[in-house]
Amino acid sequence: MNPSSGTNLENLPGEDLIRKGLDDFHSGKDTIEACLVQICAPKLARCGWELSHGTDLLPEPELHLYSMLQASGGDAYSRYNALLRTLSSFGRAIESRKRRETGAG
Image (cartoon, rainbow, N blue to C red; front, side):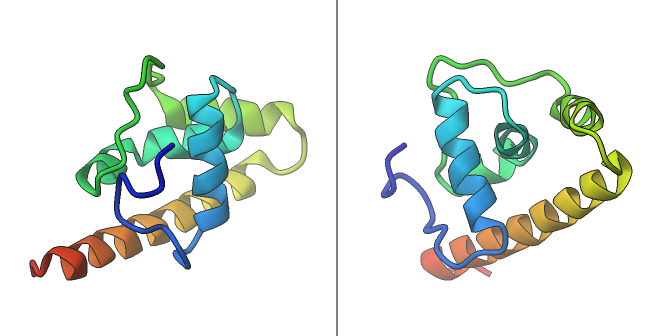
């Protein structure tokens, strides 16, 4: 991962999850964070963070994420929704930052 390759992630909601997810995805690790990155791959790509470095994206990362949460025990539904809310906040924030950086909107 090249930190200068895309919009700055610093201080965005869920930054820690996304940074770990980018590292995990590019290392070929199947983690919750890597699933989150794949779910928001289109937004990341629009902001300069390409994920296509020889690792295929999952066809349905949302379903895979839910399966992973179920397998880890606890209340998968609540955790899934909380993670998606964080991801939604991240997506809005990174797109807003991208617009400010490019002077658009």
